[in-house]
Length: 178
Picture 1 (tube, rainbow, N blue to C red):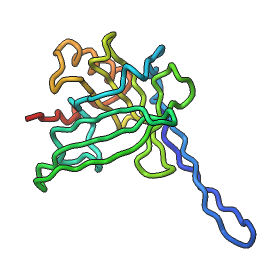
Picture 2 (picture 1 turned 120 degrees about the vertical axis):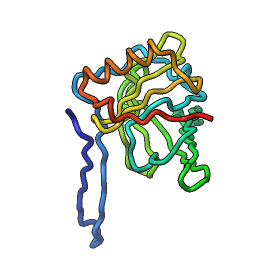
Picture 3 (picture 1 turned 60 degrees about the vertical axis):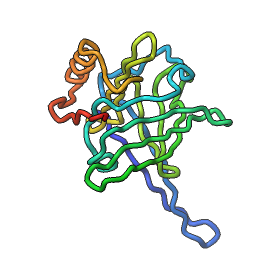
Picture 4 (picture 1 turned 90 degrees about the vertical axis):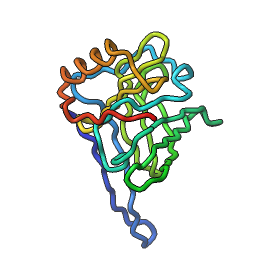
């Protein structure tokens, strides 16, 4: 399994100490991003059906994402979810860019300035209605749909593929949409 690695470089420039970072994004070993991939068809509203929980989404239901094209060609990412423990909506906005090739579904996403993480669409149907997304490693996974539900057969296919790569699908959080 490849891991996301953050490199820090210290440099002395003109008497000032500079701290610089670079982020490397990756894809779990054995997984392949969708290719060819049409980013324009991927834009729009997506509902989170399931995820491996992590601290930024903990206690969230009714989670959705809206992707739109920025003037510079990058993608604006607007995430929204209802924090049922605090009784309020939470939102975050970020941006995404292709990692290497425009027609490959490997994106790097940032919600925090220069820090990027892998966003790899590894399965998608022909109509771009349902998607399986892996992060940099086996800690991050999402099942997405254009609707708040997903057909059982597609869900089962995505779960089987994720298990084949090494994901513990028993730990998935199934998101409520009400």
